[in-house]
Length: 318
Image 1 (cartoon, helix red, strand yellow):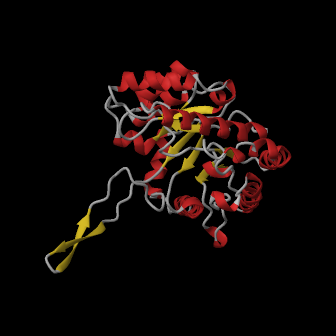
Image 2: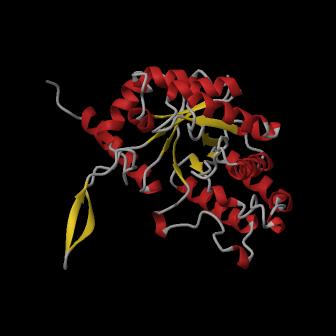
Image 3: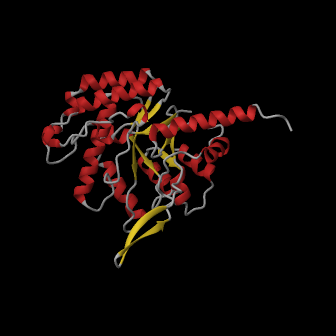
């Protein structure tokens, strides 16, 4: 099982994930690939074999009003191929996960067009890198305005308008508000794409009351033979926050209970152990850790699990 993290590298003083300059400064995929190669070297030093790349690796490449950025993938064909070869040589599984504004089933035509353009860019990058089918682009189904069936129909309309290349890279994920695992599997089967199982989302949004392992197996059943499934795992944020409120001339500090949907900085090792022992036991898959602590959360979890295993092995009998 490979453990991965998303985008930002916090260890060793931190590493940039992509060329984040504003368009006026002429950012480019070529610079992002230099950063990505540094990240690959970091991953290899720490024996991390799974990584989610920044969505903005090719900055502004899908922006409708900035056409001069649209040919970055073609302009960097050699660099992309070399970076992809390095990732394959290091056995690092790469993926991307466009953000909340990439909504393929939006009722707003301009939002749909923007989502389609972004997904085409993501697929083009992965293809130009020569990555295997396990390198996927993860999306949520989107909104459920008019009901989930209507939302699913809109998603299918957007999906069918994508190129075959983009369709081949796409996978869908259950979300924490609208589309539970059963819904995502139904859409995935309609589109012929795999489903990424997110445990925290499932715990937040499980209208059908499906046990964790059963829900996981439903999602895994959508993956084609020979392509290793991936799942998402995170711990909910538990720290009480503080909100300031003006009360006359006095400022009050009001405790705020965190939303369970929010990700914690680290992964709870005591919850991750039964996830390994029960939910995913005997199954072949990779786990993307979604924690605010990024690579530091992964390294800490690995250290904690190793320490607990050592303690169990050395515990006296009886």
